[in-house]
Length: 113
Image 1 (cartoon, rainbow, N blue to C red):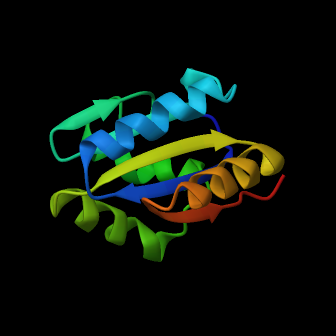
Image 2: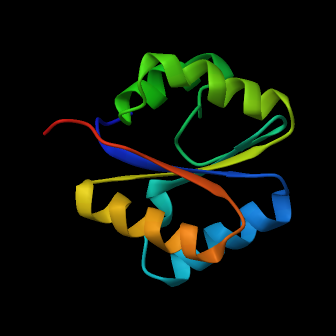
Image 3: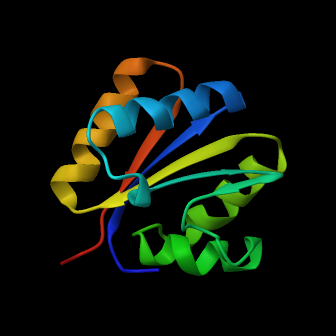
């Protein structure tokens, strides 16, 4: 996983998460920068090597240590994460776009350049 910043949106329904991915691709976000994660779902580059790689991948995307456990608990509890990686401007735009949709809790994680 390449070091980048990220926007992570937490959805309660797979259909809402999938629709968000489609909207992001339709808005011009490269599909290679988008991952969809759930208890039995892994689409994209984040955790492509299994859930054991999730912590390392999220660290590379600017997620602080104290938040890693929270994201794993959300997934275990049935939530779906849409993770978009990119530079500051890209992830800032993506977070704003997803917040406007109103179907997810959205967090931005920045890595220092």
